Picture 1 (tube, rainbow, N blue to C red):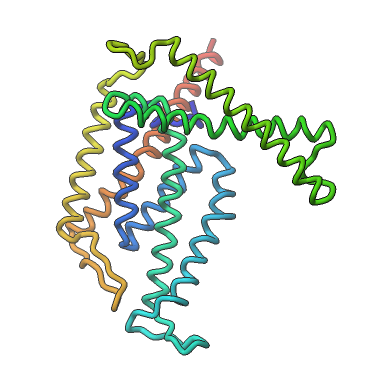
Picture 2: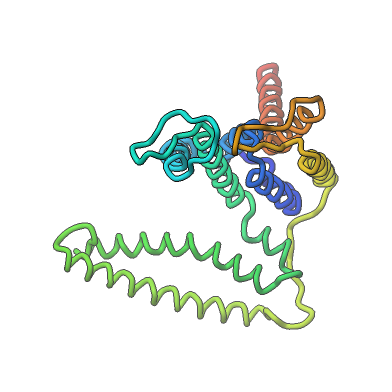
Amino acid sequence: MPGRDTFSSYHPMVNFLYFALVLVFSMFFLHPVSLIFSLACAACYNRYLNGPKALRFQLLYLLPMAVLAAVINPAFNHQGVTMLAYLPSGNPLTLESILYGAAAGAMLATVILWFSCYTAVMTSDKFVYLFGRAIPSLSLVLSMTLRFVPRFKAQLHTVAEAQRCVGRDVSGGSVLRRVRNAVTILSIMVTWALENAIETADSMKSRGYGLPGRTAFSIYRFTERDRQALAWLCFCGVYVCAGWATGGFAWRYYPAVKGAPWTPFTVSFQLVYLALCLTPVFLDLREDRRWKRREAGQDRTCSQA
């Protein structure tokens, strides 16, 4: 159905491998073309997952952050051979420092967007399914932490609203009164967190956590669709790594801007990297078209009947 993420329904191994590849490549590839590809794909996928609010987050936070990085870097980094002007401090302003700051800002924004997509797709149960046997304690702690944070925020909102209804609002009154009301809410939240921890421990003990021979229920099955997606990700990962090892993604900013020459091989590396980043978006768009064709066929059948 349109608007639903198809890639999230794939096997957790496929989801985790995809995000591992795009995150590692996004952090190490400073080639401008690679940065543009990764940033655009991350923004599109984040928009598909989180809706219109994702675009507002990108414009209000990520864009100023990237611009700030591009502005701050030349103020402290004066390397480069192309001098544009001199700062009031007497240090040179170089083109290379501006370009490197822009690349660093774009890389930071790209990684944040990919992590936002990761948290939406890789839920805690998927993480436990993948790493529950290898690192059971760590996977359990991470899963409980990821689950606890949104619950704590929701409970905090509920407690704050309840306290506001009885005249203990933290946004009004004198400073001393607001601090006293905030301390009251904090005390309530600490009590709630401790009680929740005790209930969780009792529940885990009742269900036999830690006993030898205990099995775990799983709803994930590795199907032919997952096998094809895994093969595609492995192909893209190996091909991009080969291009990385041979210098196909090489790009430097100091002392002068220089990158790998454009050859059929370097172009193919960039295209495969683009295809890798576009994989979830392509799957979602393909599934949306299928749903629309199916709905159109049902409408024609109903009209003929």
